[in-house]
Length: 327
Image (cartoon, one colour):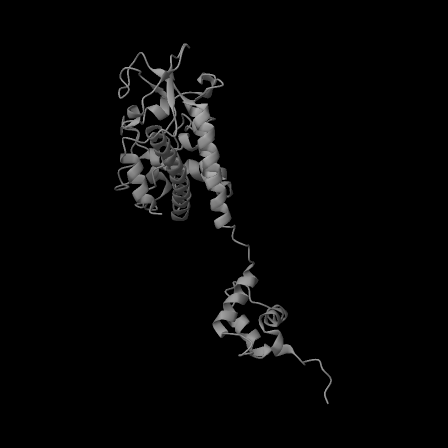
């Protein structure tokens, strides 16, 4: 996957919701006929994505990558200025990133690489303490921090992709009639059916952060008059069952890859490399030498290990009669 392209796509899109603004404690109750939109999304996500859906996708944040333009400098060169512009690094470090970037890299290393024994400078909310001390890195530490953030970024992009796909699928189902939605006043009352055409829009992002819609102005966010969105349970259950069957059939067509040890993979490689078959039975010593020479390492195979592998690689016909008594 081209993560940089996906990141640009996600960040520039005005359509996709990337966070949820409503705390679970504020969610309205379900009824026998209707399920609150957020709970309906959770059911659909579990059916669509299975174990890949962790539940934190709506809250995923995309960390910015660390810049490459880090230059090793003396520790005192990273001392913040004492002027009013305290967020700048000392002037002698040309084209340096802002101190906030240095703090982020420092925090990443403190959390993920305690073996580096960097000093802990943060409070319980992971904000730097009031005493602003110099921050320094070796070039290796900076590269490690970059790699950690790249890994976090790719993980976040996968979560955002699932959340994005779920939103688009939900909207498409509402337009097609596979799902029916209804509105209810936040204080309670009767349910008002939402026409399918109210979901024909690119401006649905806010509906996936607040789970509300205005009954008279469905394409606008208003300060008052917004109502909860619910999903008809009958069609929701039907769609969840359909997605579950699709996911299960996909697993049947793509069984889990069988684990193979490094030795098994090496034996297959050597066998293919030498073209070993019943018609071309190489002697054991020749096979064993190839096994040793082609072993990727880093540790060298022993003669005994290579001998065991050679025994299993060679066809049984090549070993026939080995232990028969001589005439």
